[in-house]
Amino acid sequence: MDYRKCERLDEGLIKSLELSAPDDNTISKMSRVFQALQSKSRLKILMILSKKSMCVCEMVYALGMSQSAISHSLRVLNYLDLVRMDKRGKYTIYSIADEHIVTLIDMCMEHITEQET
Amino acid sequence: MDYRKCERLDEGLIKSLELSAPDDNTISKMSRVFQALQSKSRLKILMILSKKSMCVCEMVYALGMSQSAISHSLRVLNYLDLVRMDKRGKYTIYSIADEHIVTLIDMCMEHITEQET
DNA sequence: TTTATATATGAACAAATGTTCATTTATTCA
DNA sequence: TGAATAAATGAACATTTGTTCATATATAAA
Image (tube, rainbow over the protein chains, first blue to last red):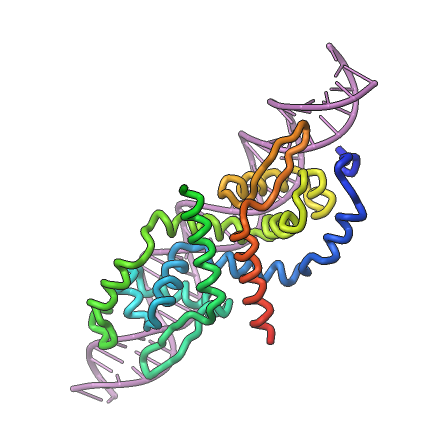
């Protein structure tokens, strides 16, 4: 099937939309960020960190997850600059990297809750 | 190892944070939304739909993806209320469900671009 | 030093995902 | 009606993912 036959298709218009689209590299980075937010564990970590910066021990207690699982999750979050880490002696204190992350999560929450009505 | 021994841990404080945390069902739904946004294909679809509502044919042309891949992607996006579908004759016109989605994507983009500086 | 605590990481494995290919359903028009 | 176009879907497959378990590293305290 040749979908270029579609009578709705305005090739010129679409071409101009393509030009204003973000490049593939940007899309890849965005995809990786959403990929990080897609895990329930990592979401829970970000949500609790948005209320209070914490060391790993505190998260183990607060989230009821294993230390290993939390550390692995934090590594991903840190790699994508979603959390910041601050090593103080034997503790590593994690915190939310910036307010965009909080907004991102809030928008998603609002989307969910509005859908319910 | 018993992480409750951590001297930083304030069990009362953490308990109060747990109480204000969203329930597991909400987290699951959010996770599914981010999961949907994590695919490059679906991101591209949402981004182009944010500029113009389109039928599937137009997207095939604009995104250079197969009709099947696009349809499968749209099914996921529709299931999660990220896009709206409007059947008009033999065409199905898809559009962005609400402005939260656009904000969500914009926040992510801003996060990416700020990180680069 | 030795011991305890805090965190990071590697390997491995089940589970989930995205695409392709083939086919089906739906709609329009001749 | 039959042919053409538009869209949806099922099966199958390789790939990616998140956790667990075991272990390593780092720091502090005794």
